[in-house]
Image (cartoon, rainbow, N blue to C red; front, side, top):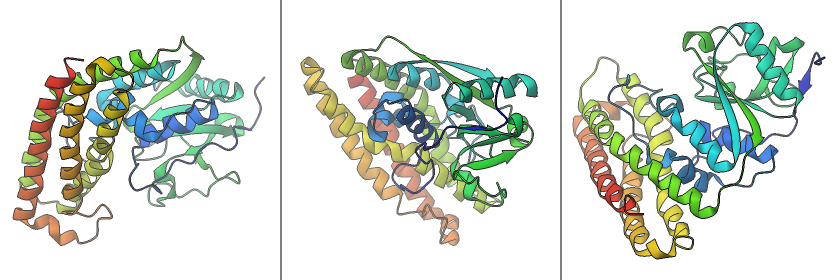
Length: 325
């Protein structure tokens, strides 16, 4: 018999306080892994998961949510495989079924991850508890502090409280629930690096057209300048920013894959250039959405787009190197 209220205390907070590490998915995974005693850093996880090698597909609707991990859904299972955990991803179903999935996991002491909800606009939430027999969920999401999106007062634990969680945004976008299962056989460091880099090559190849599409879209005039600026900010914080962690990740890999050290270093140097381009990009349109008039400057948008093209082309060369590993 489950309890009326049950909470997993003390999870690592998921918010936007670290301006250099804002990927919602990665931060929620780190929070869950920390509770389970798995020690991994954000910087390494950006490489292991494949997130640092992503671009956005031209086949999807480009907008502020284009970075959501659901657009590269295979990375969810890949990430947890690399971390040594079995997971099951469930589509939103009826309330009784979804409520039971969450309650059963919390009662086992295992946090839940939800995708596209349950707090409005969230890419990923970590669910750390429930109240009122599961009618209320508790957890963390960066959007929990934005009153327009989530006006409910926080729980005494500091977690958000979300009533009617099964409806609203979670229903609108057909969200998903991730149940973390038992630990699996641990992969060696060499196996983790090799499989992650194979995933990276696939992401880079698939993302070439996505970079092109994004750069072209940035240069187009629009009737909704705020929407365009918000899209750029979201892409900056959640796609391009994580690329700065690739070069250190590849250089760490040199100690494991010693026979491939030269190739890894050549690739790392390409990502040094990409990191420099990323830093330049951040100066065009501030991530805090200040200076809104800048987005209307066509020359600024052209210069920004040129850096996206350069990143695209450098990553294509990097994929050629990574394919040899």
